[in-house]
Length: 491
Image (cartoon, rainbow, N blue to C red; front, side):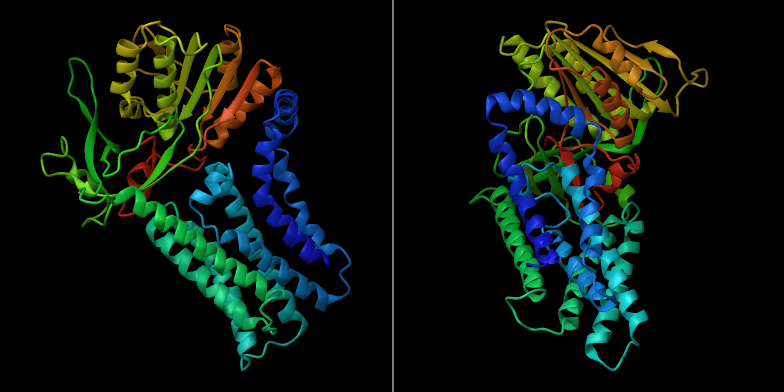
């Protein structure tokens, strides 16, 4: 086998690597010592970010004998990288069963996509400079079409944060056009030999994933003689004592009544699709109501659940960190730990929840739920909540760095969360300690670095599958429901 075939085999083996890792770390002694050193020296410093770039560079550089071979090899490597992209950009049942988290899968998809596009463009550019392009030949026209499509896909990312629905549809269309153009461009038509076999594998994988996804959606949403899923959308207000309440425009509460009920676990998330409504995203607030009986409910399709639960019952101290909408991923763990504490089922004796938001109004997203946890469920008084507000303070007298106690066990710091908060909290820890992250990358890096400096066998750090990204804007919360899909933490 040549080096491109070895690369294809290596890329395919990555699919089975999570399964092998699960079996390997099921051995107690390996899990105890191997996990500690893996986290300390590989995972927390994120060395894998630098290792994954070397494979493609080596394949393009080793034993290349002239420009024609470089042209052929760059095209082959680009097609090989297209194969795993056929799994899709969203989480699906196959990826979830392999134990791959949503952030990891999203980063892999983005990275492989960029590499495939860059290598494809290199292939086109070098080929055009090496020999004259003949636009009267179908193969050359197809090559030019594939290259132009790659450029469009690369540039269409600019639409993602603004018009997600258009981006998603265009992405699928241009990907199909690129694969078709590549197939026409390939001179060989032997079905069982590279590179045709790679394209057949990519298309077959996409069809298989689509079939599995359709079956899962059908099972979750359709039940004999039962109504379809219904969604009720409720507005959020920031409640102030002795003053007028303030409507919160950058968030809504979504309540789902399932046709086929299932018990959600902490750490799970799902995709929710609401059929198109007339008007722009802001008009979704016009559909708010008080429940399912007032006629305000809308039909919806739910896909999932995905994600796995973190086992926190053996930790004496649990520190939960969240930024923005990441609070939706942490609150189910708080509820489960408090319930386990009341039933004497967990070893946890201290829970600290840290939540960083962009504006003070955003604290209203889950204010009622937090008060309920403290008053109704925390009988042992083991929960403390600390809020961090980065800006957009409600009072003109509030200054950055101010501290305010708004409840017996809730306090607000008007500043960003930093690693010093972790170090201070660690000093009062009890027993085995878990640090759980549902944060954006910027905050996560600060916390990870602080934990790494104090790491020993009694301190563990985990990141939830569902969590915000570093470029997330608060306004994206509304765009989740713009006639398309949106992630709903622990539906």
